Length: 314
Image (tube, rainbow, N blue to C red):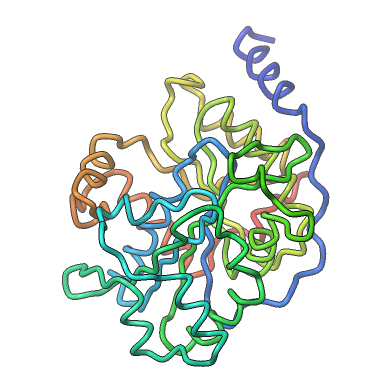
């Protein structure tokens, strides 16, 4: 066995410090509208950037799309888009939906219109502070989606990281949690009921280890989502020239997941897009990351990803 083989086996043994995930349980009730949830482990794997650009590509494809910042820990999409003065967004929409007063006029008033050439993307800002997370219960959010069903084709969600792993993630906003209301309750409900889940990993040994932990968390849920595994900021500098094969084999061995999409490292274009508050498609249509996300969106629309991304191992 070569020294390279030994190093690769050693890295996979290190990642295997977590248990092998269980088989998915029976699916839960799905939402009344097509929901694409973007989620991944702690450590900023790029959820918000991916969510913004998936929503933009869907809108450019002629679909009516609503992007919701559902990150109740650290909402950031408004900042990424350079939006300073935003409407009340999620909080007000939840309240109106609960009162059965959420009309199309209110929808347009409480969301931001983002022009993409001849197309339009609607954006619903999230909570103004992490301390208000209890406003967004699974029941209230599902009630909002019930009334959105006639307004849009797709809802794209940017979700928060989980805080209730076996090794808890400490976040300042978790210090005042009341026992009767779990911060992860909304996250778990959304992951279980979304139509499709874009499950995002980074591209280094630490990110891969966190991804496998997150998959263990996901495996506990009664999810009906079709899972699309995405490796973001793909490069060979952290794992060597065989990085792609090693990541694919590691996720097959330890999580029984196939990688559906690699988004290449494209920091120059992504940084420029952030600086200008734009999706990649409006900054540089030939951006390598933008082209890869465009291909992913074609899979999402066609539903051509692997069922649950669970590989059948021989």
